[in-house]
Length: 378
Image 1 (cartoon, rainbow, N blue to C red):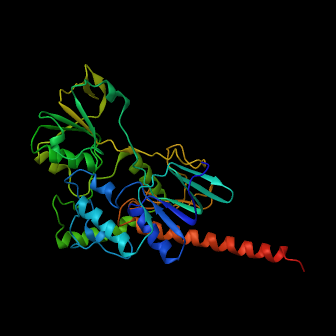
Image 2 (image 1 turned 90 degrees about the vertical axis):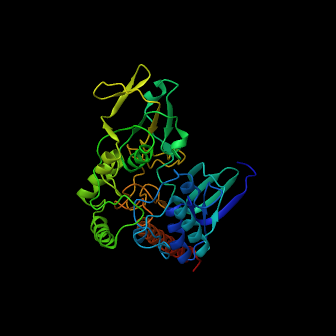
Image 3 (image 1 turned 60 degrees about the vertical axis):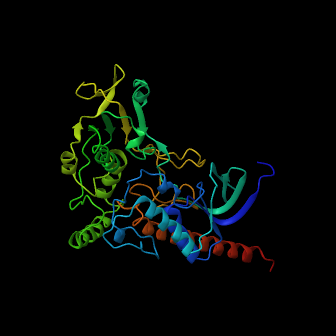
């Protein structure tokens, strides 16, 4: 865009959530000239907009970013507002260059680097780290448009509390962590049906605000063991496919909690009959509202380089895109391990990306010096 403000940086990080801040921590340690662009008006706002009762699915001892543990007891499950506040404090502690109110809408190769568009601003950089995560476009089945207009519909990304829904029966579609948590909350005041395949559960889950010490130790050991399964192994590749297509196992509780709360498990929803949700067993449920806890689809259509696979996710190895040198990703589901998209797990991936970026920069500098030496007159 002619006349648009333009900035020249070594590296641009897109996204100021946990992944972008972790990247910023390591880039700052390398004394790089970089900026973190985030669309929000305040660091942590993406967490503040989640449903009111949300808590992390991992305890504080497993949820810290590099250089600053969460300021809570190790077994405490932080609320969404506590998590947002922690991210804000993290950025302030390390004086990370976060530029708020910058919604990136384009990214393309230009020359030997990249051109990033954020509204009226343009940023030129040798390296770009995309840390937006995949959760940008709510996934709702097309047939939802055929439900009777009297049925109130919400995606889990827009759900805040039970007061948003009318009185009466509710169907929650999607039995992963979000769907199960929302079902438990809604079951206090109304009849709840939960549809979707069983995603399993992590042994030792606790429905509460804090893990007892003996269970925390078990979680720490389990975290270490599961974290050793990477996407470089056959088991890890199967785990990546499972997590991206079928959801992750329940973490802080198990299916027995749903049964105790009176949540009724239903087959999957296949379509619509007479304006009502139609189940796989051909029953039509008469409900007042539907909550679609069906996850999100990746939305990287604003990136021009052809770096996406058939599943819509970037083709990358440990965050680096071979087809576009200097382009990196962070926070993808099972990017390298099961914990890659979590607050406590993204730090390792961020460290690897920063080291890869530094090695690339050093190689370019050596090549430039060699070229200058060769080109100099004798």
